[in-house]
Image (cartoon, rainbow, N blue to C red; front, top):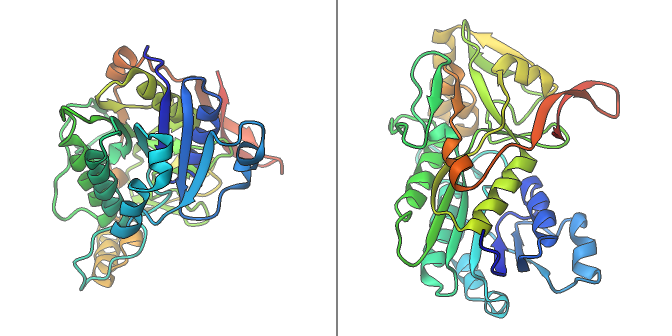
Length: 342
């Protein structure tokens, strides 16, 4: 394992996954400095790092990563030059694609804009030698049933009628995939299923990110959902960082659950709707330009389940899940999904 000292830029460091990653890498002896980038003010969780004995190892900058000028200013800033940034870890924005697209606009979702701009500047800045990007397993093409066992070589879903939410993940995936064999910049793409946070929050699953809204599925179907704990995602990023392993890797935990069970464990509920009605609702959402709503009403993930084959990550990164995902109880005594170290 390569333990050369790293100087790292982390995007969306103010969001749950970013905060956990910053904390982990701050205590990593192989990390020299961290430049954390977020859309809002620095999280209070960073206070002890920004003001403590190790102040200087972590710095924080507010940047709108979907806009060209702020991103250009970031990558050509004195902070990037001062820290001699050599590695960028690009985390996706929590939740959906960002600003809603209107039907009449040929706009690009924020997630896609961010991926394009971050990749472009990583290719341009000579000091940056490694880009680690988080992607989604929703890019894979699913066939009927729950028996989809997906490897990194499985087909990608290129249906032009995909919801904008899913299409943006495919577009980002293709951007990073195109540079996998770049001679100067090493690119690592980690494809994730539904991510479970320490407190039971669910990330990267448009059907379940808002527990107060029922998770809609086609009646007669209860698709299997692959899962991964946020702690295991952070571990996978850390392994990719130290090994500089280039390529595409599936990252998943040992557990998978039917959509209805996962919704219930997350504090919500699942609602089965007849297929024709579901298609009608999805069509109406599309006409209205409500792409966030359409993402939770349309797509094969509401019909067909999948699990991920992680053998490549195990052999190349040394990745093994270190957290279990189970049903526990919150501070209020109510059942909730939670993660814990194995």
